[in-house]
Amino acid sequence: MRTPLSWLAERVELGPRALRWGTTAALIASILIIITGGVVRVTGSGLGCPTWPECSAGSIATTPELGIHGLIEFTNRALTGVLVAAVGWAILAARLQRPRQRVLTRLAWSQFWLVVVNAIAGGISVLAELNPWVVAMHFLLAIALLATTTLTWHRARQSAQAVVLPASDGVLAWALTGATFVLIVIGTTVTGSGPHSGDSADVPRMGFNWIAVTVVHGVLAVVVMALAVALLLRLRRPPEAAVARRRVVTLLGVLALQGLIGVVQSLIGLPEALVVLHLLGSALVWVGTVRVLLDVRPRLFGAVLPVAGDAPGQPVFEPARNPVGAPPAG
Image 1: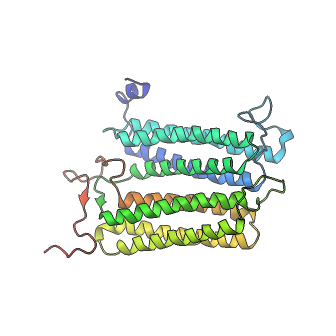
Image 2: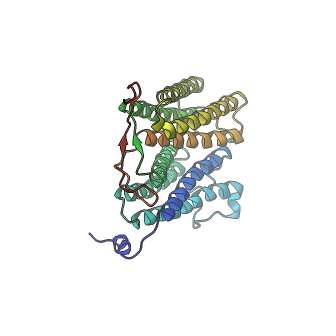
Image 3: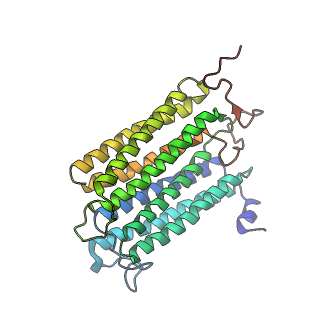
């Protein structure tokens, strides 16, 4: 079935640069929406706009009567429009590539639908008067969006000459990704059970013991770091694993800083600035983990088509010539 985009694709072509810029804008906007959501939380502005989709009865925008809390909440909502524009750019740029890479178009469209679903979840959290379970769902949908923007951003830059590492490395990378996701999920229970940083109102909390879930969260963080170290040790020898190895080292650095921030904020009473910084860290940890997975398993979502700059006549993927533990050829 012909669509306006298919009609346009027959007449207009955009180069890889437009795709890279579009996917970068979507990635940055999806991180910013998490940060501003954290600012909304620590300033107690979750109900700064008391209704949804309007900010107040009869007004889409904030009004002077709503004060600073209304302005903060409305700014977070308005950023969704920036995110939609960035995702739209990524969709258009992906569709107008030649040759067409359907996986990129589908990933870009998945961003759009996740933005829509997350906006609805944000509205439900307001209508539910910041029920912590709904707020946690809202955050996890933002993490899902971040996963798709990272996937699209990475694939838009991935060379067709990416190598395939041994399957055992892939198992470790998947385990690292799964453990990181569980770590983030448990983090939402820590947030939902503990003190509500920056808000003196009697907001509802989850029914977990805050100390217990904090300890579980910390243990999971150690597990994630151990898996990252194990993967790094697996990648330490093969020369074709150099890119993935650097990515794991970067992830370990971000994990160490994130762990330090988490410990400090818990010990000194959850200062607002550190809570927001910890949210930024969680986003960067997730981006780093997804990129590690994509560097270890580059065939995810199909092969990458050659683009300008790739060496002609080479295979799209080359298997690792010397898997870990195998003797060198010859």
